[in-house]
Amino acid sequence: MEASFNAYDREQVDYADPHFRMKIWTINHKSPASEVYGPWHYHEDVEWIAVLKGTMAIETTKYYYPLRGGDVMLLGSNELHRSHKYGQSELVYIVCHVDMAAFMDPSMLTYYAAFTGKSANLTMLNEPLSRSVSKGQAYALLNRMFQDITAKKRGYELAVNASFKMLLYTLIQSDERKVIAPMDPHLAEKLRPALALIEQQLETSCLIADISRELNYNGSYFAKLFKRGMGMTFTSYVQMRRMKRAAQLLLTVTWSVTEISGRVGFASPAQFYQLFRRHFGCSPKQFVSRHGRDNGSIGEYS
View 1 (cartoon, rainbow, N blue to C red):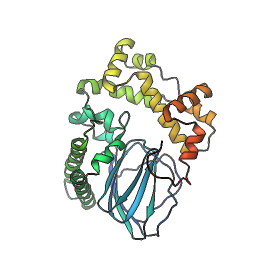
View 2: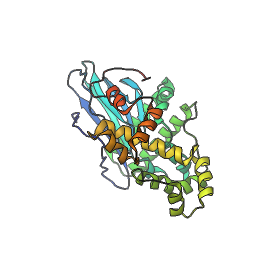
View 3: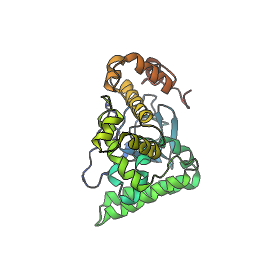
View 4: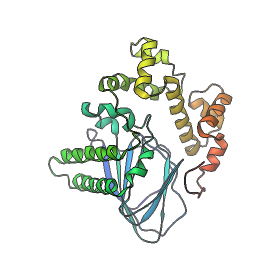
């Protein structure tokens, strides 16, 4: 298929089978090199990219990833990103979108928080993943998954599922910094509905008392439970999620900073501004300027 970069913000991934929430396809980009980026966008799904041939670049709000044939990279849930092709040769790459929550069977529940991207920054894993052994394994697995899901032979879901779990295993084995930290399965089961409720209430007050009451927990007990499972306090987690959502809105809609502050649960724009600066090290306006569509800088942003 030809690459299409129509303007959008929150991309809705359509799955052919609602019970098998994975989508793998190839993009064939034959046009000449371009310095023009596609639009900033994000999606709930984790995204894998494997470049078959040609050269391209993926940019997040912190990193720039030049990619060529044989390279693999990972984008976490709700990770803002944009891409462009460079070089004159034809660009062909595999894109794999996965609804991680749908693949969290009981054997994987301990990794729910990490792989759904709610707390761990999965882009930190691209550096160790780029090393030859891990990269080669991940590249081969993504190719196998693409072939199986395209052929759709009887039982292909089992083959793709097995390859996907091996892909996650390869990722974990390359994770020397232990970004992906397993959680006690009983604790994960208790916190999963809390994480879902938080996502639904980012535009409102989202108080720990309300969440704990909704789940029939004592407030003090729930606060300790949450910190033990997520590695941060409830308040810190909600602030982190609100700041990530604010960054998405700043780069994908034309609302004012005041309106955006309200859309992520702040009654006071001044409080939002202060927390945003503390979180990103710059003002909302500077953030937009730094990551604007015409920004051609590369490397990790300071």
